[in-house]
Image (cartoon, rainbow, N blue to C red):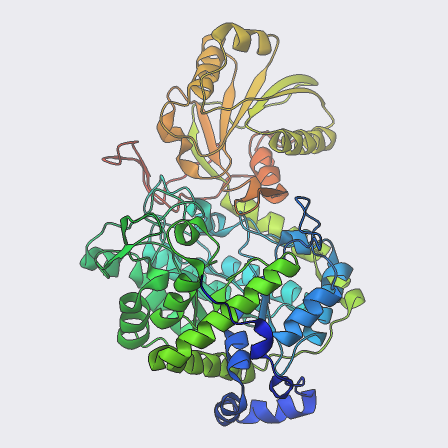
Length: 621
C-alpha cells in the first residue's frame, strides 16, 4: 500500500507566512524582478507550490453527502485551507456569483484569507456563450463581434468586461479565445471563436485586450496550440488535431503569435497535435494515446517558451476535464503538467468538503516527495513560482477590498446594457431571404415558435411581446419544445400545430446530419404557404443541414451553456436583436436592419464545398 505523507508534515509553524502589508507591496512593485527573486528564495516548498495552484470551490458540503450547496460565502474550512496551503489563486464560477454585493464580499474575504501575496481571482467572462456573472454585461460573444468586423466594438466589449470585473475584485479574466473555428462540427468552440480567419481573430482579440487592459485585469489567450479544428469536446474526450505543421503555423498558430505580445498569459488545450508532439502515452486503461498539449514539454516549453519566446504565464486548462481524468492518474498528470512548462495548474482538485482538502494535502505531499527525487521538477516549481510572483508584482495585483455600493453602479449598468444591444444589432446576419423578411404584422397575429428548450421559447415570447407593445399590435404566440435534430414529430402532428398560424419561427441550435423534426416542420410550412424563418441561435451553420429554407438569420448565441456543470444562462441581447430584424416597423423597414457578415464559411456537410462564404450577408430590402 502506498504511504501518504500526512499534510501536517508539510506545514510546520515556521512555514506560515503572514500576508504582506500593502505598503510593503507598493515598495516591491517598484522593483518587481528583484523583489520576486528575493521573495521566492525565502519561500518554503509549500508556499511556492501554493502560488502555482488555482482552485475552484463551486459547492460545499461538510457532510460529504450527495447534495450540493453552492459556495457563495466564506467559511472557516475554506479560509483555513487558503492559509494552510498558501494558495495563490482562485477561479470562480456562476455558482459562486449570485449578485454584486455577494460577489464583492466573497472576493474580499478570499483576499483576507491569503498568506503572503495577493491572490489571483479569476473567472471566464469571455462574453456570449461563456459568461460567469449572473448579474453583469455579457456582450453578444466573440463570433457576433466577428460578424460586425469592427475592431472598436471588440475593444468596447473588453473595456466593459474589465470595468465590471475589476469593480467586483477580479484581476484575471480567461479570455479572449483565439482559437480559429475552422471545423464547423466543432462541439466546444464554435461561437466562442471570432472567426475561421486567423487574421480577423488576431485583430479582434488584440482590440479586446486593449479594452480590458484599461483596467487592472490580466488576460489569457486560449487554447494553445489551437482548439478550433476538433470534432469532440475535451470536457469528455481527448481529441486530436490532425494537421501538418505548415498548416498549423498558417492557421492555428497565427493569432497566438499576433496577439502574444499583448497578453499576460496563455492557457493550454487538452488536445493531441501529432505534428508538434508524436509521443504516445499509456493511459489508465492500458491504451496508447497521444500526448495532450497540456502535458507536452515539446509543445509548451520547446515551442511556446523557447521557439516563440513567450515570457508570460502558461496555465493549464482545467485539470478535472475528461480529456485528462479519463486517461491519466491525477497526481501524475499534475506533475507532468508542471514538467511540461505550466506555471499555474488550474483546478487540480475540486474542493467541495473536508475530504477534498485532505486530497489537496496528499497532492502537496506527493509533489514534495517527487521534487526531492527529481531536481528537474524541483527547479520547474521554483521557476514557475517565481514567474507567478513576478507577474503579481509587476502587474501590481492588489488585495485592497472593493466596495459593493460602487460596484452596483457599474455592473450591468444601463449604459453597458445599451451598448451590449447596439453591438448585437450590428452582428445579426441575414443568410437567406426569399421575400419573407421583413414581415409585416397585422392588427392581430398568430405565431408558432419551435425550439429545443423551454428557456429559448420563454425568451422569444418575452421579446415578441415587447415588439407587439412597441408596434401596438396583438400577438397570439404558441410555442412547442421539440428536439429538432431528432425524428419524433409526424407530419400530421405538425399540421395540427400550424393550423391557423400566420408565421413560424424555428429556433435551431447546432444542427447536424438529418435533423428530421426541423426539416419536417419546414416542409409542412412550405406546403401550407406559411412564412417560416429559421433562427440559427448558436453556430450559424444550421442552414447547411436543411433544405427549402426561405428565410434564415444567424444571431450567434441565445442560451449559454456551461457544459462543465449544466448551468444555463440566457443571452437576451442576441435574441432581442435577432427578432427585431424580422418585423417591419412603422416606416416599412425592419425594426433593426441586419448588418452582420458571416465571419466563417458555411460549408456542405461533407466540408467539400462552400455554400455561403465568409463575408456574406444580405439586408432585408
